[in-house]
Length: 285
Image (cartoon, rainbow, N blue to C red; front, side, top):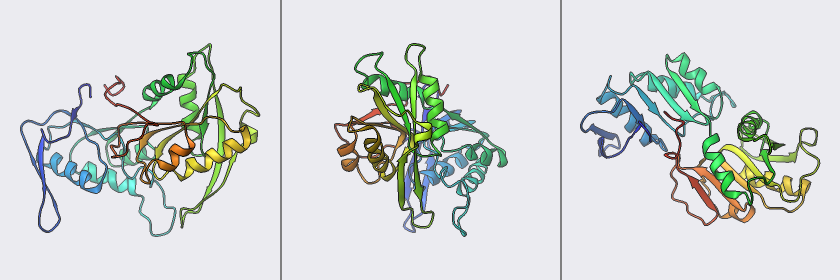
């Protein structure tokens, strides 16, 4: 990806010891900037072990989907603030600078700073713009982004502002939900009538925009709320990081298209899934 070198088998060999530990051995010269897709605890440990083996050679690591970014506070007594733990772990590698894409909250940058690191957050605007352009019937088709909950509001609003054109502003719909911190159960999906357009033009491209799609329950609930408020119309879903841990069947039954980057490489494929490659952007230079 541009001048980042992909962390793959060309740089290290990896194995698992009989006791279960991840083993890593560096191969050849380490690059100064590394792109590492971390999608599991094994991936994270392999990266840390590699950086230990080449200590001092790598100066910046981009982790597109930053693990533990969603656990940035204590929701239930007994929880760690996991993003702070991650930052301290990465600080032990000696790498001073990190980058990520569309991080879940500003708490991640604060956690990295507390650990003596810098974390550069790259906005998802370039990849989202390509996705939206591919869904528009005409360049001047009206577009409206949907913030699925209160936490997504600022991010979705910033992206709408970034991608708006003088001749085509991007509207913004705000939705709400309630999550039980103990069980994770979601309820109370609704369109915020005080901060959303009362009606939309019939040809409006309506795109739900957020950073992460994990199980997808939030977006299924939001889709119901949107249709109850605006009527039965095509809906599109964009999340920068498409984990899709429960597959795509239910989402594809509700959304006309589903978009994401390839920051998280799941094994899911579907005719309605559109993946925007990270490589097609200059934003990480």
